[in-house]
Length: 348
Picture 1: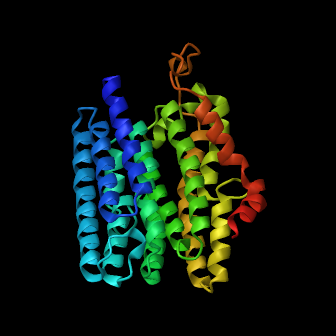
Picture 2 (picture 1 turned 90 degrees about the vertical axis):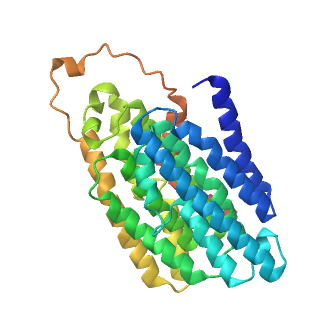
């Protein structure tokens, strides 16, 4: 792609998200979301491949449906209450409609069916943008409206953690596994949203760092399915040795960074008297842990039956920058000891 066009599209992505962040009026927020969608579509369709075009079309249709629902709900709210302010959503009908529209935008279960399909059709770089940056604007709106319907949020959160764990069990394609992982993490964030928005933000930040590491790792190995992972020993042995730690951090095992948000969320849910919800969420984390363990096993504990040409030392050097991967990997593995400091910052 022409670098000037790429720069304009990335600027459009950034601008759309910033407009949504800065807006207090529903029309402006909707406009930011639309700019976001329109800027990423050429990035998704840049490889002229039927699979990429299909993924782009699916993405466009779901985002357009979500944006139309959002606009309809905000107009309904203005009609019922005379308010266009984002934080003045008082009527339950537009509040519920907006929550569901934003859930469709970020891919929360049961409105998640588009996400694995779309992510599977993209290359890893665009997939990374879709899994991280594209979640920010809708999430900012969910945080601002603080949906009044708490039951709906808990249902969305629990369904997402369960489906995110279940859906990934049978997959061999890495991008689909990452999509289900994304659904499960978003479910955890939505579960705790109404009780502690600061913990939700912390979970979002750790999710962004861990997903960034995982995508860059797969990109470095040019891996898109589990079988390709087994050849990574001969490409990057040191990184392959660290990979289980990155994946188990995504699964939320101590003493890794990914354990921190899960620990704080379960603690908060128990404080609020929602022990059954916390138990279900913790059990659903075991489902996710299974497929992360499966990836770790395929990558680090198996060596593919290489012939001599497969392990040649004279590989082309990778053109990918390794500094971002090194930084995000260190953060993915080592941040758990900072939990007391972060908790002190989070408590009002």
